[in-house]
Structures are given as C-alpha cells and as structure tokens.
Figure: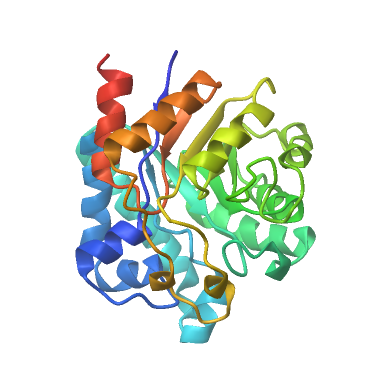
Length: 292
C-alpha cells in the first residue's frame, strides 16, 4: 500500500520553539515575528520523512487579521506562508506543498461561519493567492457540512486538487462537531470533484470511529489527529487563546503511531499529525511506514 505522509502541526510547535505567549493571531503571529522558525519547522518535518509541507496559512483570514489592524497584509502573509514552504521543499529536494485553508470565524465553531456562498468568495480569494505556489488546496478543520461546502466551493475555483479535512466530535467520531452525521459530508466528493477526504484536529480515538464511515468512496481517505486532551468549552469564546487547551501526556510518538497504523488498517492512505504532533511523531511514522 502506498502511504502519503503529511507533516505535523505547525502552530503549537512554533509556539513551543519561540517560547512566545500565544495571541489571537496564533501561528500567524510567528509568521510575522519569526518567519525563519516557520521555514525551519517545514525543513524538520521533511527531514523526519514527511512527503508534504502544509503552509502556515491556516489562520490567515480577513476576519482574524482585522481586529489586530493588519487586514491590509492579508495577501502578503499568504504569499509569505507559501514561499516559506516552497523554499523548505526546494531545499529538501522533493515533496509537495499543501496550501492550508482553515475555517472562517473560529475553529470548532461552525455556527460562527458565514453562509457557504459568502465563504466561497473568501476561499476563492485565498486559492488565487496560493495557486502559483502550492500543489494542493487543503481545506482543514471544517466542522459542519455548510462550512465545508463553502471552503471547497471556493477552493474549486482554482486549478489545483482540493482535499477536504473535517473535524469530528471528540466523544463520537461518527458526528461532525456540528452534530451532523459525518456521512452527510460524502455528497461533496462528487459535487466538487474532491481528490481526498480526511479527518483532522480531533482525538485519535474519535478518528478511529470516523474512518470506517468514509472508506469505499473511490477517493483516498486520510487522517491527522491532534494531541489535545479535549477542546475546552472556554476555548470556544471570543478572545480565547490556545493556552486554554491542555496537551495530552500519553501521546508520544510510538503511541500515536499505533493509532495511525490502525487508521491504515481501516483504509487510510494519507496520514500525519495536527496540533501537538511534532517532527518526532512524523519520524516514528516514517520509520514504520517507509522503512519496513
């Protein structure tokens, strides 16, 4: 079986490496303040064995930049995020670049997202900015059908393959965080000609539950879980920062790799990590999946 190995999470690892206090800009703050750290992390994921670098553009949305008075830097920041990933890839000599498109509003709060039609315009703008640099558009952490529809509708206006990654309930992986059945996402595959469907930024246990609902759709299936204990209720509020989320102490590289091997047994062919999953985790995955 041919397995594609994604990288791990950028934002939390960048915060750890910078020893910075998190702000509402999250990973975008490090893109502004410490771009060399971003490139270094892309390089380290490639060296660990990743096949794909995901751009540090997840949180670059106009509605996230506006409160900080830097909406005018929207296009510049997307291009910078792309160029750092491309530079690391070129320095490594191989690999692909996935253009990250995170959720509008707040992560895990699809109720705050605009309608699919309005969101599509926002994502089409991002797709146009990223297109010269990326190999794939990766719509990440979409937590409802409507939120996912808006993202892939906009991304589909570009000329790159579109991958969709959805986030599921941490207690019941058969449901999106919106409460909708995960199977309600499946019609988007044919409607928008998606080229991969993944589960991300959920607990590994929830991913275990989700994968069987997605297989046998004639499309590559994948997963990349996070390393949080849970998505705390107080993180859902306006102004919350990621220091409100606790990291699991029981999800080292070997344990995480055990989970991933289980997803592969259930049919996943694209695997990697999300928040709190770092180069050491990807290195262990590469050791098991690429080196026998």
